[in-house]
Image (cartoon, rainbow, N blue to C red; front, top):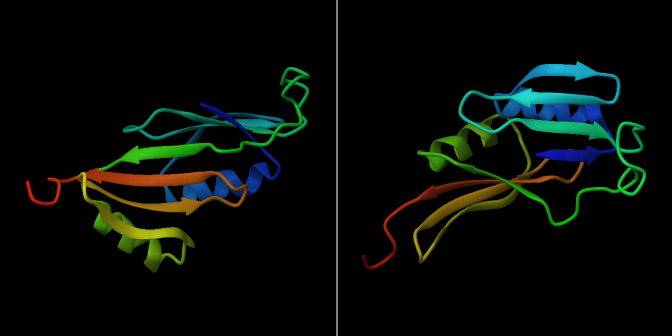
Length: 121
């Protein structure tokens, strides 16, 4: 997954400080972030010449980075203790999805989900 961001340093800091990623590849205008239990995330500075001209100035819109985890309540509490702004508070959907959402400094929505038995099951 590759995302264009206005403030590369802010997103790098957010993903490494709060979400357990580390930089695996970095150069002027981009970074690849890695976490052993997740797909890599590539962040590219918007306007970078490494991007095709047709997408060079685009910002992510309607993009949600999704993490399926085994204890969403513990992750929610940890992030709240760290002072990370919660965009959508912890909730449980009737079909068996327990989730919450964050938004990184560049507006990337990050959703944490744990699948639980549906209500009434």
